[in-house]
Length: 249
Image (tube, rainbow, N blue to C red; front, side, top):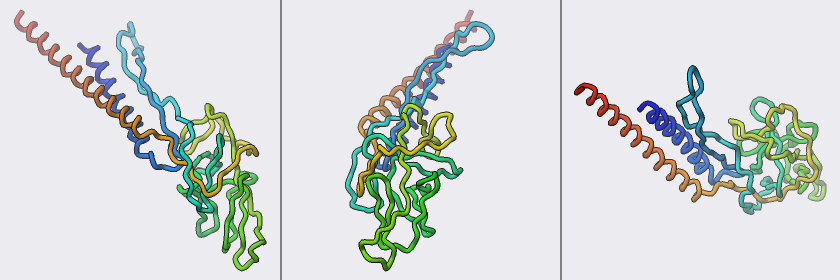
């Protein structure tokens, strides 16, 4: 009975973890530039002393869905969406370089260009982009060049401040860190900028989460979880019956 009970217990545990993955995807269905997490489960033998006769279920987050989300027009000067493959380079809380598709940018009181999560947007030489305040206008071109119109200056005197660092790594080499930024597996060095990546101004890329598919997966996992619980109860009842037979004999 213990083998059936162990398998059902581990399966129920991994079903719960799988539901958390899909619930997180569903919660981010409206998050700008979000990439859905993928999840699967497989059986693993338990190795130790003796023969590996026990098997448990292990859920894995196999990676992310890198399909492009829908692009919507906002008309806002600091909203940008990446055309095709590519990423915006930003600085995480630890000072390391990370990558995102979320292009809802803003300027803080100190003049630092940030994304919607407060992470600094990187420019030339991998340094954060500084906007010399006050300004009347900020423009971001298709190649990521940031230009400003200083306050009080004539309308035709736009000044180039910096250029947003745009990179194009192989998506297979990326993983999603705990802060939601993507980073290169096993590489702590900044990537080189890629001039082939371009931006769409006044646009934002939405999440690539399919809400219907996520809901369906959660329902399937919930039913599978209930089946595992029933299996545990059945194993318990069979164990009690076996104990009763032993007492009778």
